[in-house]
Image (tube, rainbow, N blue to C red; front, side):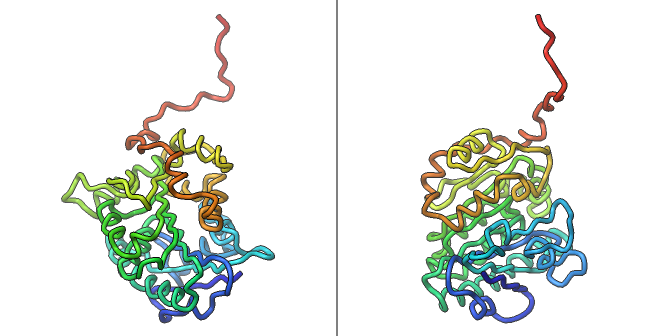
Length: 300
């Protein structure tokens, strides 16, 4: 196993290709808002993208370890792609688009050096914008699978990315949660204040595409489908949460299977088993409270 740290602002394209191992998939991990390489408190290479995060904070878990890296006999290359997500949301959104070009250069170099190796992307929040922006700078087949977690990007921008050569060939798993509704609304109002109807990926893609599937993790039908596939996930525990898509127990084994054993979970088979539509916005926030564990019905 190889873990390679890349910063969008430093180094030069090809760093990952020069250091990559020879076997297994390449999994590129991309953080979201408020992280920045080298920041004393928010460096992603010390936190989410590290094999051994330097803090025990509840929201910080090791993505590479949970994706199957760092254990004896594992295969593949983990690429921890860091970019400057600090500043205002608007500033970070613009920089995410630029970081996508740097990411594309790294992936292109990887595919040139080892064209047969699959390259997958695992991205959260504004990291989804980085990932989708990269597609416009890549050739067909450069990216195999992408998992986007509560992506802070607009549906129309995602549809444009799917029209590129790399976008037409990549398989995209768009993971959403009604726990993220408040964050989706804030992103829409800050980033697109003059268009009140413009929606982020939390609503799913506007039009069905053969290489895209929306996975709403707090939909009861999704939980049932994933359980049937052998991946039980915990029920939602909070009404508002931006990080449940990688903190909820049971999700990482599913993500790992998508990226390491794609033949076992074909996109079309998974989509056929999932609910056909997203639940309405605020479904989670307005849900009735769960009964207290000591509540009992009075015998009639």
